[in-house]
Length: 95
Image (cartoon, rainbow, N blue to C red):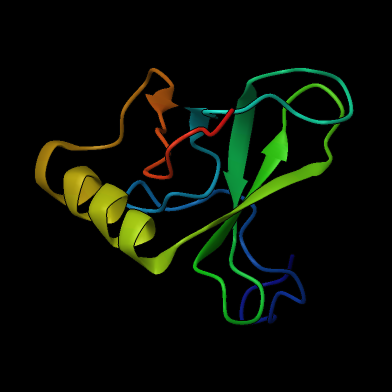
């Protein structure tokens, strides 16, 4: 790229305070492949973030604003985790 030339593409790496790219362990497995690990992606529409299955890359969950804010606060306070974050559901499982 020439000096002073504008880039047409955004940076591909997420800032260290972003949830994008974080690995999470979900409370329920992917409906397509049964995997419980997912990676967080950027927001879409009214959602704070999205989770995609690490095995089949399908959408597995939307991340609530409350969860997003909590994880962001943790990252801001102690830094970006290297291990997967375990996500628990606050909805009781019914038989």
